[in-house]
Length: 368
Image (cartoon, rainbow, N blue to C red; front, side, top):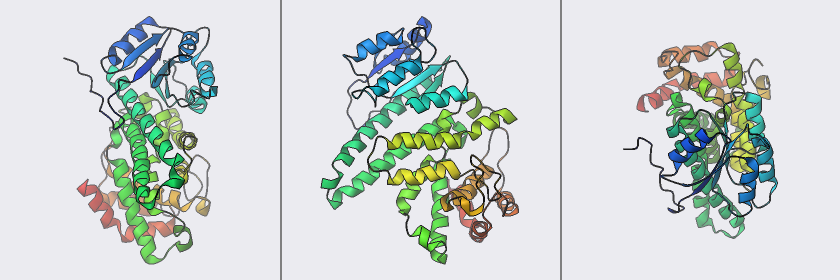
């Protein structure tokens, strides 16, 4: 009996999807094909040129592409694919045994949607393929809706927003699947943010700026604040021990990676409002009030308000959550840490708001 999870049926129908698997190693082709062919039509290729020749006649739903190959490497192949006006949106997942952040960033910049490191785990390969096929289906649906947006009546607007949220949620779930210690973090983060927003509005604080926000889209977009972790190696994300200094430097790259990923998503849609907020969250939620944060070392009010709020929310949830390398702090311990970091890590004005309503944060964590 197979131990592999069965991919879920999506609302796009039950047509068997076609996967192209490209690797110059015959063993990898056999393992990958055996893993996928129960659920998908799998065509295997041992070189980039053979793949490109077949792409002239057949368009797959997804491509699994080895990076290191003779004749033509994966980077060269994806550049050709993405430059073809008929093929730019085919999702490409790189397969590689090379652990190199610069290469990963290059691949993502060229249009890859993910990396899978070899030797790969069959269940992980199957899950990654399933998630990216779902993302692509929802992207196509979203593009279809946006192309007709001007002709939609008010009754359809709610449907578009729900579809946008589905895309964001799927991307966020992809991150949580890779970083399996963060279960529930995204949902709790949204609830903490709503507490903050409601209280700031009640107090009349930051009125002019908050008046320009679409609060519901802001909350949806918050799901992508850690999306850059899709570019971080599994060995770091899933490490059961405390990170080394170099590993921590690598994981810090996820903020800048997140900005690039969101920019990439924006290329496939004409409505970028919700991505504007997501980009702010992704690139600024690790900045610190005293300028010692990353990736840009912003200081004080140079940090957007959304980033300053998310900094408190994100750290609070990290503190009260258990990790393989640390116990979960109590609520009171977490509150003390945030209070002690007022004016250093966090905006002191926002810390005061947090301290006035910290019991509501405790309730969110308790009810989770």
